[in-house]
Length: 396
Image (cartoon, helix red, strand yellow):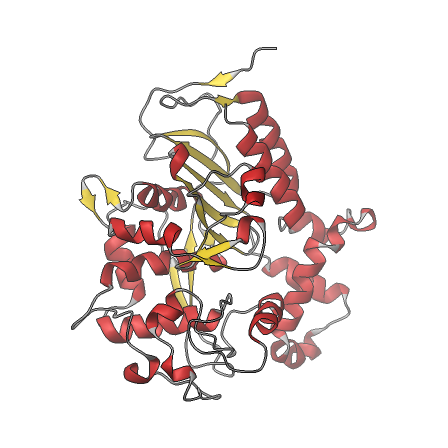
């Protein structure tokens, strides 16, 4: 049977409705309409909040709520990295990658750094290879366990051991602001949000938060809509060029895919460079991702996938605003207002258990009617991988 195709022709929309039909046309690329529709149906069942597919200057398809800003979680780190590339260099107001933590006067509290840890350079933090196993804001239990597995309790000479490490990312925020005299929030607005005419900005687009019992360095949360994420992805696809202006140095994007570190994992997370994931191995090719692909990723598969070989950007979001569901879950477990002190003191542990319940327990037939499982959908690994394969296989 001959395949149905979505064919090309027009310029990408600047303003997107929450739902776009598959009939949107695009230049010199064809996608299988039937396969994309199947992927859409599957994604809506698995909990996708929004999805957008862009190729060669046009929107191929989009569904879900593309205009509501929600948390990017760890996908925010790719935005931070992009901002830092603008200021990387030597001299006043620059972020010098060769400076050590000692030279920068960086320490931490309540747990101080050792002499060896202070020899880590800015470039080591940029490449997640400081080797510093230190508590940090915004880490889930799973992140802590994986970091401890890779780094253990001993010390590592800087640059010798990769680990996905919120301490590196959070401390770079402070170093960037100290060395440049510019708040990251302001740099994001000046260099990215405003030039790209992002549409769904608010006072909560960039939010700083602290966990002083763990570290003196803040975490930044970015809240963006799918269509604004797509604009950022298009900027990256164009190697930092936007409407004739070189917003981001083009050399930065070349470094992402040439200076990545092998993580020891297979498939989507086989490589990591400058806060981006770089799937380079054979498992990645079997999934269908061509060489040169890189992507930002956050909890619940908040993703911006850049595929230069196809002139393509994909954006995927799930909604992790589970405040109401979390309190319902606490009630189901027997917690009451009298337990508020315990809840606050053990908040991260309880949140981890809650997320595990959504991802794992909600898949059990006995929980399908549970109010929490109906309210809260967090995309799991198995479903997302199947969905990604469906999208990649839909390209003719």
